[in-house]
Image (tube, rainbow, N blue to C red; front, side, top):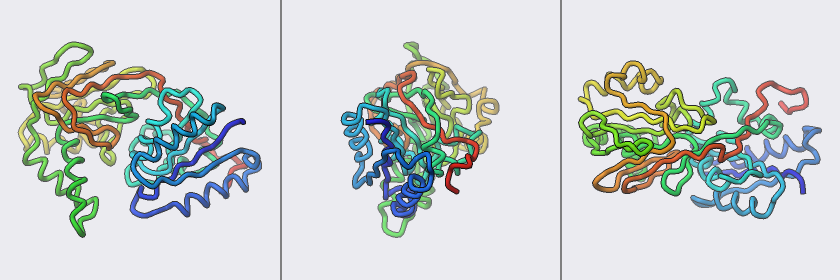
Length: 318
């Protein structure tokens, strides 16, 4: 059968439906690039949450030769494709960032973001091995977290359903409410089997990173490595709101590892269990769950990732 290139487009990603533009760019690439004229490709458009996972799993079962899947959407679309491709050696995944949140690709700071939007560059791209985390039974490519940020993300989903409230405004409303009510979360991390005491036992944020960025550009786990087989785990204890505001800028830039070192707990590990007296809100690649004592574990080399060719090739379309 040979290699199949499967493009999964999420029309709900981003501020508007870009299905027509993305489809045109795919067809132009395969029609105009002489090296791609005989390559087999398919385009699938999702209609509901979970479709990208279902489509990826279905084609992976049907097509046993190399399958390269291009997730055309945001980080949520990418996560769905990853869940369908995980631990399948013949399947590789490429993010095509046309969504509103495209945090995973920020890890590759040597590749200009626009290269991920160049279909020919992606199709000509090489594959690399990537680790995955698993939050209970759900795969996570980038960052999983609990505390203020996860609760804000969950509240945003509810607030943005209010008429005339946009996603950005909804996030600010949710963040303000969480800042006033959700800074104190009684969570006890167990890191590689050892229970750790962080602060006085209450956490503002705890994040487990395979990638480095989340939440629209916050560099939460700046030293994480997607191929070292380890989780970068940080926990920030409950501190005064005044102190927290003082460090928000550093947290966004990834400077908190130094500026907050008197408060911050940091370990590289293979498993993290977050003990709590009741279910807690967990976000994993932007997906929201409510779990009791969630466990995050590392699965080394569980995914093949396609990185676009970094340099412009004369055979590629412009």
